[in-house]
Amino acid sequence: MKKILLISLLFSACSHKSNNSDAVVKARAKEQTVMSENKYPGIDFASKKDLACGMPLSAGVDDTAHYGGKIYGFCSTECKDTFLKDPAKYLAKK
Ligand SMILES: [Zn+2]
Image (cartoon, rainbow, N blue to C red; front, side):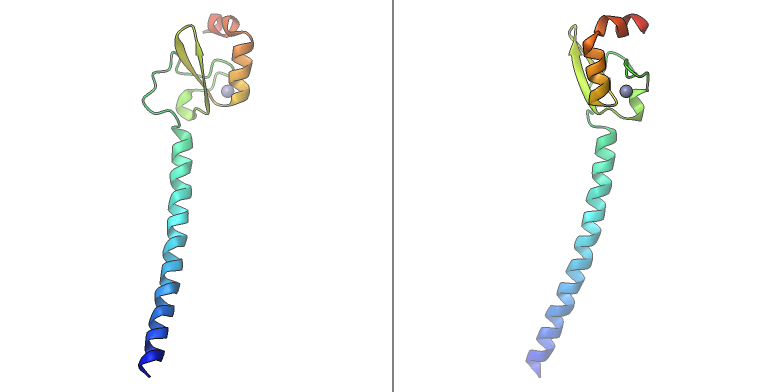
């Protein structure tokens, strides 16, 4: 009788644990979303916007480029590549 009680306790402990890990996974996914919005905290970008497409960096920075001793942020690697192909052109636009 005692053994059965123990097993049912273990079972309920397990099912409780799996519910918790579900919540942890959801919390982590949320955390990652927040992190991707602010991938480079504390970096002083030379421009407040993505020079290739003109999007404000506050909307999210996915890649950065160093040019002329300054750091520029971009919404995507594609934008960074576009900028790096002809940085002078985009800097002149500013
Ligand atoms: Zn962009």
